[in-house]
Image 1 (tube, rainbow, N blue to C red):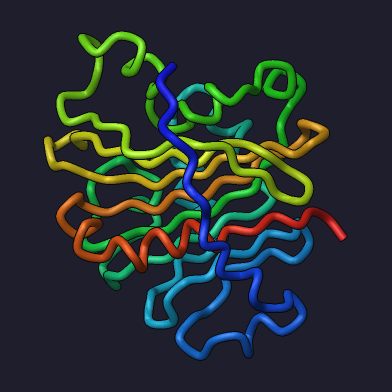
Image 2: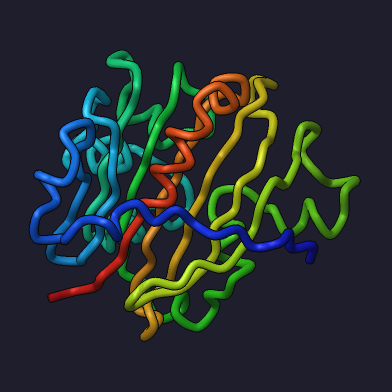
Length: 219
């Protein structure tokens, strides 16, 4: 598999004590689940989609294994630039109106624990490794922009930034970080996505969100 050179993450949260997150910057709010030790910095003016709303939307899924995955969700939240964006839209692959941030913590069952790999983490929402290995099978607008290892205090995995055509043919750019805990019992996910034109115009802000993703683990 092709892997592009690793970039240094900004890691903006490192400048702030986790005990004083709310005072670190008045321009940001912090999506956080203290029990699982997960934090991500979000622009203050964005709109929140609650854990409860996402659970309700996900419960309507009829895809194989959806109910089992939902039962293992520890915490999830969404944030959007548009007030019109729904929980169902956060969970879809359709290019949104503006940008969406989705953060999720899920426990892994026995089969997942045995099969998880960096390639599995890359293929979280789309078969990226298949597209890279065989370009004839790739999405028509697929382009890999970056792919590198991310290591946190209790987890490690990959951050992958790519562009693809959504189900309606709209070019969409995704910044995806997928981490598995060191004991392989839990997965931590951050997805930042937007139409490619929007992503390019707001790249600094959107990539800073991905940089801020922090996993400290259970206390």
